[in-house]
Image 1: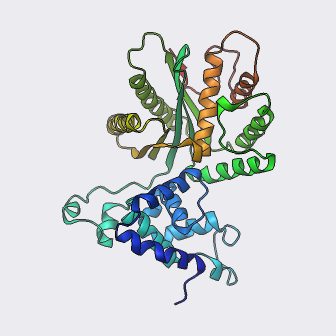
Image 2: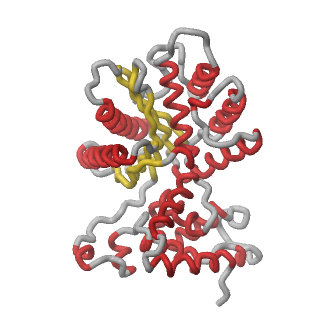
Image 3: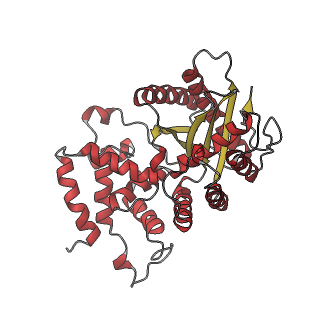
Length: 365
């Protein structure tokens, strides 16, 4: 059998990794490709699919169909496959091999215990505990950030992608707009100035045009009197997520059951590790006690905003809230103009001290 060019590129990847060579480096490379929502290699694309489509973790055929629809949509849009296009579509053998690297070698997005047992990838003690099937529900994909550590209000904010597979569409739109206007580097609120305000407004336009599956959540408290800022932030992140889930389920926009993926902007490694452990523990408890197991906590991790346009959007959002709430006296500058335009674009009354119109779960105390 003759391998395609992409299959041939994947072939040398598996053998050295199985021997333990450069496993961590490859894992970081794959996770970075997922975070950027711009995967190019077969392995990266399969990993992206396994992340956003939990049902594909148990089925190579399902993974292949999603791969075709997502990354080869010019050749396959669903239904019958044309004789002319079939040879150009990614082969199942290549996709299955990439899936094996991601799951079995890198340990990412693993299949359910039953499927792993079938595939012979469970240790003996695991086989005895293979009772719980990993749910294949739709995904809440949350990107969170914080602001206001020196202001009147301490706050957290987040971008929710309610149809997580659209993360690649939103990212592509932002990257395309950056290319059109010659914007280099990361979108970051603190970098907004008179000289680049127009560029940031153009990028905001790209976000608005692709906002059908996104939602914004925030939570804030007065900073004065707080004993431990880091502990307060962990609690704010937790309560923001809980209120957000409740609101989205009640509104019918994203009803339960759901898988939950929570990512926070990376800061200091040791502090981030402790923070993620605490937030994950609290979310697991909430899943059992508040949502009766209808929220499956899939991923809780930090993510570097420099490679994640969606984390950059979270920064623009939470910083816009902070700019309005913690505004100092003086003339309105470029950051004030952008913050107002960003929030008003999503229905927020920036003239109200309560920032009315954003969301039921945005509250200030």
